[in-house]
Each structure stands twice: as structure tokens, then as C-alpha cells.
Amino acid sequence: MCIDKTMTYKSTLLDEKSFKKALVTLAHKLAEYNSNNELYLLSYNVRGDSIANSIADTVRTIHAKPVVTINSIMLNLFKNNPPPINLPTTTSVIIVTDVVHTAKSASEIALGLGQVMAKPPQLLTLVLNAKHKLPNFSATFGAIKISLESSDIATVNVKSVDGRDVIELYSL
View: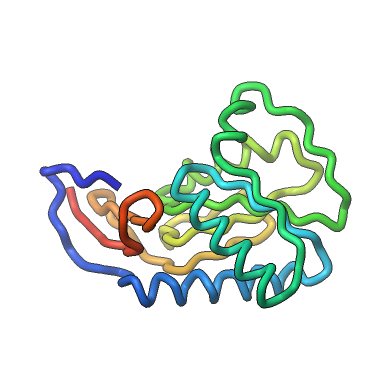
């Protein structure tokens, strides 16, 4: 994420080693929670693409479970007029993003995609603002649940986009 000069660094929430461990932990939780279902990971942004691919690789390797990933570019093609998604009832749809700062942003994600799905999606995010309850999701998976103040910005950097895997906290 691009850091604005008006932002002040507060702390590192996850360094590179902890970041990788968090991804593996999330992959295990996701696979166990959805043990009887095929997984569809829909990434919501470019960093979500990287996160979804890492999660999918871990689930495929360790749990020998099929995982379909749909990247953010495909989702953005259908943003204003999404086609119906007809998936078997044994399919779990998980929306993958880097940070959910507000309940409103989470609702927009769910409503944008939930309108075309038969059952509510699940959410997987690296940073989740603990101050907000998230409606419209059947399950939520987060690496870090933190109470963010209105002036706090959690930034997620992924190696494929930003050159490093790290989560940091800044204030405006």
C-alpha cells in the first residue's frame, strides 16, 4: 500500500515470518470449517489475489482439497452487472481481501457479490476491525482482529505487489 506523507507509523502488526504463518493458519481454519465443501475463493482486490493464491496453494497441498480462485480482475469485469453464480450447495464461497476497516466496506463487498449467490459468502481477511459486527457473511476468518480508531490505517503489503509481506499500523 502506498503510504501518504501525512501518515505516521505506529507499529508492525505482522512481520514477514508472522505473515506467512498467519496465511497457513487461515488456510487450515478455512479447510477445516469447510471440510465437506469445494472452496471458491473470490479475491476482492489485487492484494486479495495474492492472499487467495497463497491460501489456495496451502489448502491444495496440505489438505489435498480442490480450490477454485477467481481474481479481482474477473470480478471487476462484472461489478455493475454480475452474472448469476450457480454453484452446487456443497460449494463454499469465500471473499478474500486484505483489510476490512469498517462494517460498511464489508457489507458492500458482501452485497456486491451476495446478490448473485444462493447462500451468504464467507469472508477471509488479514486485518479485521474488531469494533464492527459484520452482517451478510456466514463465517469470518481473520488473521488479526484489532480495534482501530477512526484515525488508524492498517496497511497490508504483499510481496507480489509491494515487495514484502508485512502488516503495519499508521495514524492519520
